[in-house]
Amino acid sequence: MTETVVLKLGGSVITDKSGECAIDHARLREIAKELAAQRETALVLVHGAGSCGHPEARRYRINDGLIDDNIPGVYETHTAVSSLNAAVVDALRDAGVEAIGIHPLDLGLAEDGRLVSFETRHIAEMTEHGIVPVLHGDVVMDRLRGSCIVSGDQLVTRLAAALASRRVGLATDVAGVLQNGAVVPRIDRSTVESLDIGGSGNTDVTGGMRGKLAELLALADAGIDSHIFHVSKIGRFLDGTDHSGTMITAKE
Image (cartoon, rainbow, N blue to C red):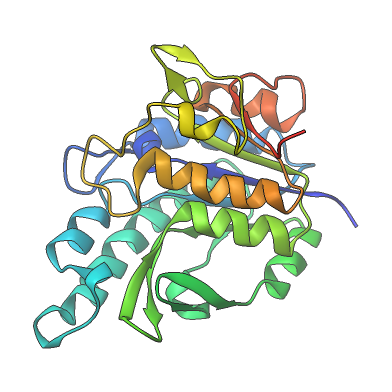
């Protein structure tokens, strides 16, 4: 079985998070060209919602649970993130990548904000046949709250563990996790609390960088390291020639 790489595109990479569903189609085309050049890589792609979904989820208070007046927010939020997913898939297919969009709302169930059921066997089968599944942060049904937002970062950890991936990358709009303007090369549980890390500067209902690190440290606890790097390094991450950025790992 070919090793599967799990790659996440940050929402801020492919959208303008200060607007509302402002998709960066030019950036998507650039990324698609990079991925098309790595067709021999078995790849699962996850992308954040960026400005397509976060505003709707915040407006309808999706993470607070469902009550009568916010039920339409499930549709509105899912529609917004699905439109971004369609744009990502279109860009990939235009570049020659056999990409297919997969919506977590259709196959995931959460409890108090955490996935408790998420089918991945068909995703593994897709990668075996050269298909690139493209998943995204989404609203899902929640057994306690009614609904919640499952971030792309939570999906990354779930997928990497289920697919036994040893290569996990998160492409962002910065060079890695920054502290005083410099990249932190390595983070584990013994060092993370010493970092001055805030949430997202724009509308983000998934916890920003601190939420991302919490997910990746849980993945590291399971023995799977990950890298956070600038989006311009995607090609070199996939071919294994560049490990710059920040590595999230278990404590030695």
